[in-house]
Length: 231
Image (cartoon, rainbow, N blue to C red):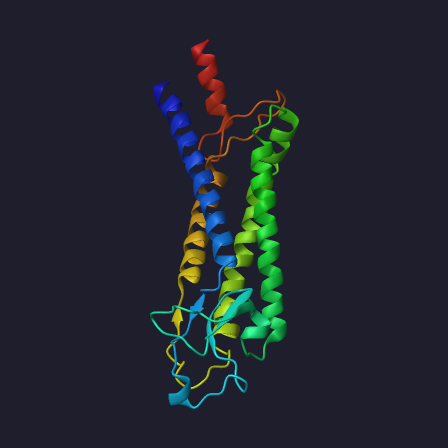
């Protein structure tokens, strides 16, 4: 009897942990998507490299949507990163269609994460019909899972088609992965782990009585037997 109660309590703890990890993963994804530090390029000396700003685009750092050019006066004292704006205006590359696809896919993933988070909040409402329908059909896991797969695929495409093939000026060969990309990787890992925990430990509806009980690791039959034993 005690083992069943302990299992129920542990399931709830792991389920809440999964929700927290998934929520933090979504936050990390949003932060990385809105910043321009997926790739950071070294600062160059325009005079030494004989580069004229009106003839070449010198990108300092960029992300999925935003890129920043290196300003003509760039030093450690001023810390001026130059002009930031659209990726298409501040980064030279040939794969315009691929970049646009990545932006659309990442936006769709963000929308799916919002839907998933909203559905999780809806389950907090005291309406059994909504709660049971969403839990039974795994709607939160479905939307969040599709979003996570989209993020993973498009991060790979970004690394292969944008980062590796974007044009560079002389002296920018040693570019580095920025903190925005690292945050995106952390968010992806949190989302995957959170999805696993939420999928395994979410309580599913019991057939017939409109209540919830049981999960993949704790079948509903254990709940029923526990109630019969306590009565």
